[in-house]
Image (cartoon, rainbow, N blue to C red; front, side, top):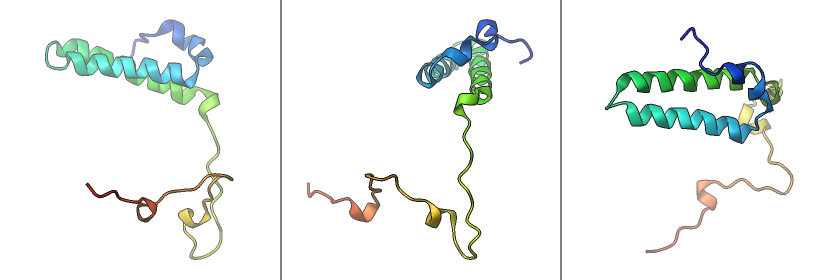
Length: 102
């Protein structure tokens, strides 16, 4: 996987695409890989390599980088105990979900 298949995207056009467009391009290559796996494995491998190349470009996109949440320094605390829901949102647990009888 040394040759860049998406020269125009790697040259900077990729970073102008929205996250949805980037994910759509990756999904298309993955779909091609799945489609050709049993019929033409060499085409499937090429599509998979292109998908991995696009994923590498996504990882290089500075718009998708965020800092990790700060870790609590309180002894005995767990990361889940320090996480809070956004205002106006409510997290659902399995016990909160009502089950309907068939």
